[in-house]
Image (cartoon, rainbow, N blue to C red; front, side):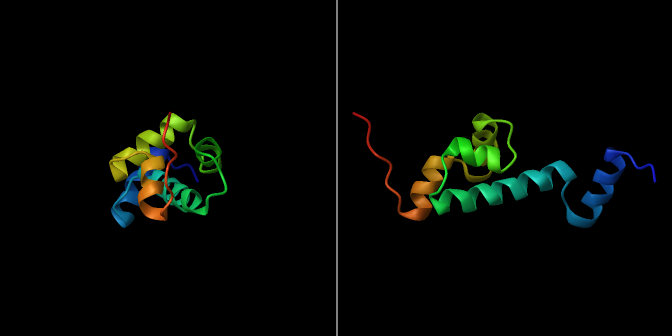
Length: 86
């Protein structure tokens, strides 16, 4: 069965409302949210665990969804207080 990625992605969007890449990013962000609340890994480790190319990619996609950094989101959703610099 020869099906192009573009064709498959368009058909997936018809059914789900998301292109394949968009859906994959949503799943990776959900995994990152769970990992952030788990307090077991650094942001670097979480970006790797969740399949992002690097921390900047995770931060960029996270900010698109939440309008804040992963660290700020963690602080707001877990009661975790970021240490003050200085």
